[in-house]
Each structure stands twice: as structure tokens, then as C-alpha cells.
Image 1 (cartoon, rainbow, N blue to C red):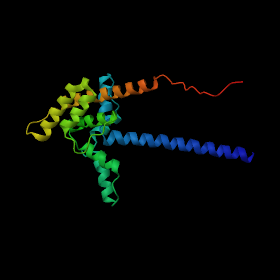
Image 2: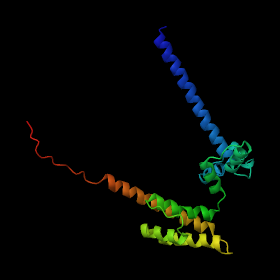
Image 3: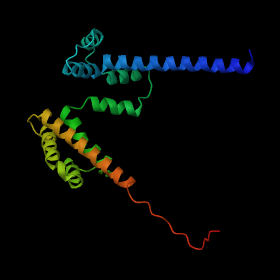
Image 4: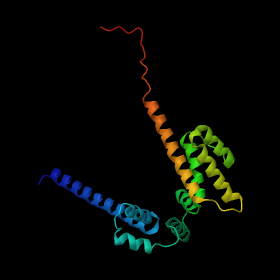
Length: 203
């Protein structure tokens, strides 16, 4: 056997091993997600909606899932080891600890950034909502409903209505993505300007 053929076979073996390791890593992440996050319940809900019976593995993972979110447990592990907590993990923990209404309210900020507007750090919720209404007047009702529910939960003794906030947030997200897509399509469909070069003679 030639050395070149031996080298190629060695590279092929390593590729197979790396591929298998990648597949195992993805499977492990999926199992951890089913075990420690709400993904398992979402998968179960989708299967039930389709009329399928969820596998017993998913059922067992949901029943044995801890009440403490995975991101919080992971952050606690960093603290126990004396390691600095990554920024993305801090944001993840912050997001997990938010209520449904607060998470939905974040869609206003995300929609603004998605459309190229960065609200100031001192901007009030009402100012952010007004800025989004000027950009997307078609979701004015959704923005105002979401603002009312957010302010009710944050600044008043009354309870907010999470379902109203969630629906409003979903509408804002969908509309902002549609607007962004329309901008991209309009940009790529612009007619190409043909530059006229003078002083160049052919032949």
C-alpha cells in the first residue's frame, strides 16, 4: 500500500469519527434540552396536536424535569467552581426569570432594533411604543395592548393578562419580520445602474 493511500484512509477514518462525535454531541444537547428546558413540553404539545402519542422517553423526561431552569443551574455551577459567568448565560438567566408579559414586552425593543432603531437606555416604555407605532402603524393596536398589560403588571397592583400580551408580542414580531423581509426584497430588486464610461473606444 502506497503512503499516499494510507494517509487518505487515515483522513477518512478521522472524518468518520468526527462525524460520529458531532452526531452524539447533537443528540446529547437534544436530550439535555428535553430534560432541563421546556422543549420537551412543546414537543409533546405538538405531537398531541397532530394526534400522535408522545414517546415514553419524552414523557419520562418531562415528569422528571427539575423545577429549577437549566440556565439557572448552569449559572450556579459556574459560581460553585469560582468561574466567571459568560455574558450570554447571564442574559439567558435574566430572560428565564421574566414573566410572560415581560418577555412579550421585549418584542417591542427587538422589533425596533430589527428595523434599525436603537432606543436610548433612558427611553420609557411609552416612548419605545410610540417609536414602534411610527415605524409599524399596522400594529398600533397590538403595541398599545402590550404596553397596557406591561404597565399594569409592572406599575399597578392589578394583574396583567399574559395571553393578551403574548398575542400582541407575536403579532409585533411577525409584522416586524415581514417588514424587514420586504425591505430586503426591495433592496435586491432595485434596478442596476449602468455606468457609462467615456473616452474608451473599442477596436
